[in-house]
Length: 142
Image (cartoon, rainbow, N blue to C red):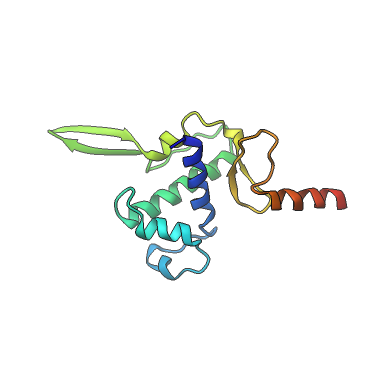
């Protein structure tokens, strides 16, 4: 899958989480969590356990939100995986690093509705045509 498509999928999952994410034990009943994010965490087959998938989403959200503060060095816990194989440490970058590596930071944007999106076109300023129309109408009225 194209990295930009994977990034869009990941941003969609992140957008499905509320600003104050519930505890993993409360996730099945949390009404403010989008169904796609809930399904990814609870029923997905990536990254192992639901706890690991939930931590992964929260960590990636922290990375994306950190894009608002350029020039600051950020560190994250889930960007590397390691194991011991035949007495040696085997480390590899996590999936988020593969997705984000080389992506133009200016193309990851926050819409006026607070959703994150990937702008394929440099002049795209909203996550959807509905938000673009609303923003344009607000500009006309002001």
